[in-house]
Image (cartoon, rainbow, N blue to C red):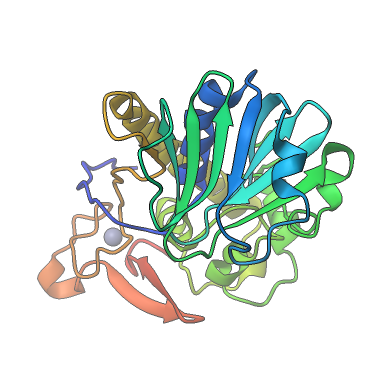
Length: 293
Ligand SMILES: [Zn+2]
């Protein structure tokens, strides 16, 4: 398969799985092993109300780990409490070595550790959310219980994906956006994975089995891992920069590249029209009709 050089695009996009993974990796060294000495909640709700006793249940607890499940950040605490956070459309985690002189209008939650470090959850559009759960019943939490396999987990494979697609008469694009099929995939990485797997986004999901499902599972893993690697570079840069986690430069093959030359074919754009954009269930899909069948 040709592996062409990709253009670099900087987008103010909704955080997808790689952004959330990058946020978790950025938070971990500042939170793990630290005690939350002060927790501030600066409004009553985000997308949903905060749970009762939100600040009290977090204050004084030591953070054991920061993990990701789908697009949820899971902060495990020493008494079994788990803080579940979702960045929504515009959420950011900002790390500062001390309290800022003044809070911003969109600084909604503040976690201060015994090292003096302050983690601020900032969300202008307030589609994000925070909730509390207990570790032993975490898998049954309403936000998490219907989620399919983690695409970067050991349990995800071609046969597992094929089994979840079997009998589904929707498009493969729509099936991959269904969080019960595979967890955490969004619009961007579905386009990118289908391109890499050379599968048309309009194909019926149930027809993706055998070698096609193997190719797609591998492609999903590859596009996510490549984006996470880019996020990792942004974390290294970030240490000298603003302290804002979660947004970084991406390299996309087809996403948001309507009319551009397909990076997988040597076809003539004047004849083929290049990367095509279609709308499926109200969302843009980008693909190459020559390459993806
Ligand atoms: Zn092409």
